[in-house]
Image (cartoon, rainbow, N blue to C red; front, side, top):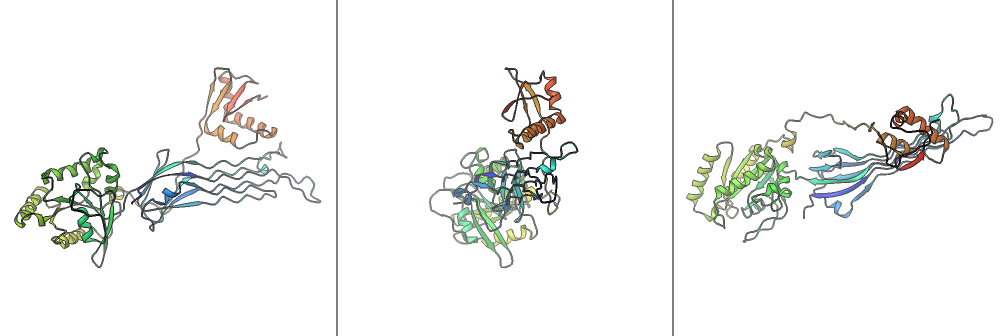
Length: 430
C-alpha cells in the first residue's frame, strides 16, 4: 500500500539557560560576574531523500523532537547547541505548516527547517552596566517551536496514465514496464498509484498508473483529490481510452469526463502534453480501430498523438513507447507545473520571519490589566520571578518598550494588578 499522507508532531529543542556565576580565584579580588550564555536548541529539519518512496515510516512514529541545548557555565563558558534532528522524506513531498507556509521538497538533498530550536539565555555577565556591576540574575532558555504538520506525497513520475476505471491502464503499465498491478477480467479500479519503469536501453522513464478517475473527482467524488494530486507532478499524460467500454458508454463522453475533471482540479493540467492511447483494440475490428484513430486525430489536432494499442496483442506499444521518449526531453525539471517559470534559486538561501514586535493593553472587568503580545510574553519566559533583581529588570524593560506608558494611558495606577503571560502581579514602577 502506498502511504501518501501523514501528520506528524515536530518540536524544536529548548535553549539552554544562562549561568549566574562570579569569578572566584585566589589573589583576584572582586573578580566580577562570569556567567556564560546557554546554547541554542536544535532544529527539526526535513531532508529530501531519494532512497524513500512513500510516507509509511510516519505511520509507525509520529513525534519528532530535536535535542535540547546545554546550559551556560562559569568562566564565560557557552553551553553547547542542541543536536539537529533530521527527518528524511521522499522526493515530491509537500509540507504544510500551521501558519500556512508550504515547503515543496522535490530535489534530493533539499532541506527545510520546520521547527526552530529555542534561543539560549544570556549569562549574568551580559547584564553588567556602569551602575549594576554585580547582576545576580540570568536569562532562561526558550522553548523550541512545536506543532503538528501535514505531509502529502505527490508522485514524481515522468508519465501519468489517466482514464476511467477499467480503461486498461493497469494492463498497459504491466506490459510496457515491470510493474505488477492487480488485473482482473471484471470491472474494478486500482486503489493506489502503481509505478513502473519504461527502459529503451539508453534512458528510463517512470510511469505512474493513476487510479481510475470518475465524474466529480475534482470535487471529492470517489477518492477525488487523493488521485488527482499525483497527476500534478507528471511531465506528460497518457489518456487511456477504452474503444469498447463494457458498460456501452460513449468513448467521446468518457474522454470529456476525464478532461473536465483534470481542468477543474487545476487549470495548469490542461497545459501538460497529451498522448491518447486507444486501448483494447483487439476487442474491435481493425478497420473500426483505425477509423476511430483518424477521427480522434482530426478532433484533437497535431498537438496530441493518437496511438491504437492492445495490451493483449502488444499492438501499438512500441509506437507508444517511442512517442513518450520523443515527447519527453532528456533535460527537464521533474515538476514542470511549479518550476517552469521559476528563476533558478541560490544553492543555500534561508528566509526567517522576524519575531513579532506588537503588543496590546486591555483593562479587565475587575479593574486589573492584561498585556498580551509575543515581545512581552517572551520577556517573561526568560526570567525567574522569585529573583528580585530579575523582576526589577523586567519592569525596566517594560518601561523601555513603552508598556508602562500604555498602561498609564489605560488608567493604570501603581499597585494595580497586571497579568502578563498568565502571571498576575502588582506592578509598581516607582
